[in-house]
Length: 150
Image (cartoon, rainbow, N blue to C red; front, side):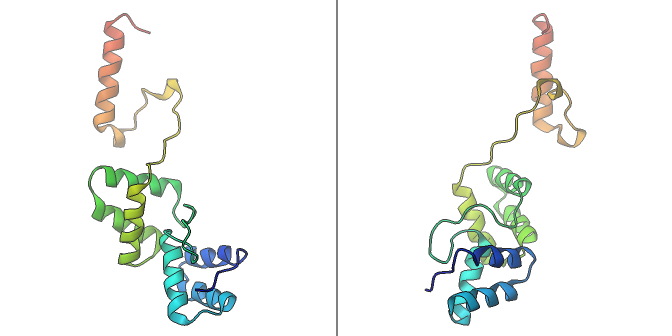
């Protein structure tokens, strides 16, 4: 398979991010001289974020934002693989197989580490995120108060 020049990969990814796979395939074909099917397959791999045309692991710079990756990793940790695939498809516009392959690749990567929360904000849990974390914070806070406070 002809290698895609380094300067062409951003243009292909940009077209993918805008949801224009046909343009991405056209760019790939023009820059590599590859056939239609070969170019389509390569662009789909790039869109899935799994591999570059050369077979190397692609960086996690796709149309997904960090928030999307965090959400998908959370779903995978809760055993909601189908929902994770749906979210991936919605955010990237790729097909079912590409989304499934990408989510399975994400499953093998470590989950993103959340940013540190300043100590003063630990008690400010949003109502929509209360759940288990809210209960845990209440129990820890109660234990601190019962032991004599901070």
